Image (cartoon, rainbow, N blue to C red):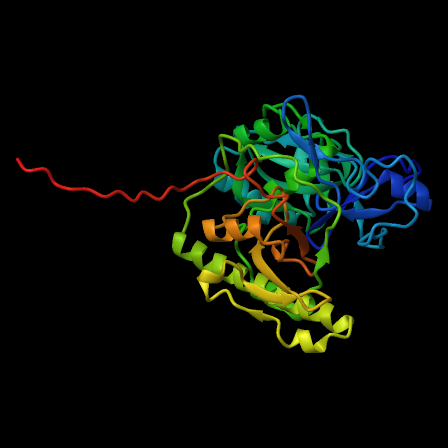
Length: 395
């Protein structure tokens, strides 16, 4: 546990990233963690690079400590590991003259010898559980958690080959990315130029890095993630829209299977609708309105309505819910709405967008967006309809 409660700490749990809120931690007398970035949001540095806010959304802008903890807080558990630092370790292209050798080394050789990485020149001085990113030929190709190091003596067979010690990485922490992170992407996100020297990434950039390391398809959902009974939606109520997201010029995009992508998108959308249906029924049941609960229904098959779910508020008035779903964690809002949906959002107070993120986890996050949050100042047209009458002139 941290002695300095004003320090931001990070750890992983079930593929989710958690961060302390210094204000909540000081008020409560121990480290208080929330999902990150959902409960923190982003700021931008002088170069326009996004990094995690220090304090949670509830504490930001408040001069006094919170009277109670933000819903969704958690504390360190036995298996949680604090990540103290993030470092980049370049791999020698002399030793690894092909990617196939790198792949074989990380997936077979290193695990078979106790996760040991032998070095000829010592160039890492880090704390235990530091996240090490492996760089090969200008790309990040994998990562692992650093555990310890040791020197070797002259009687060790590797000594004659020029090796002087080895790093040990935590068991089962070594992962090779299926899609390497390009050097251009690292520079655009973290202002780091990859070279043959070790370098560091600030912990405040951790949420952005996590998004890059999560190299599964953004819109892909596995069978285990489809079980809605094991999921509990967590609404994020303290957030605001800060502007239009600026996209980087380079990406990690690979060749896309559009048929598979469409099927995944449909599966994610369907799962999102089912979760919101369950969520709305549970709310009405909890306030004793089972009569209204029975009327909540999915209506997405009727495109003319401009929404996906018909629900009701506590007075019995209709709520028209348009559901947008994302399988992975939220970095920024990114979705399409039709003109019909947009007009209803602007003109109808009972029309609202429910944006679900992190559907792969047991605790998806819900953001509610209304017509005040989404308006002409922050919506971007990407398609124009052309309808023109014409006649053929006589020659």
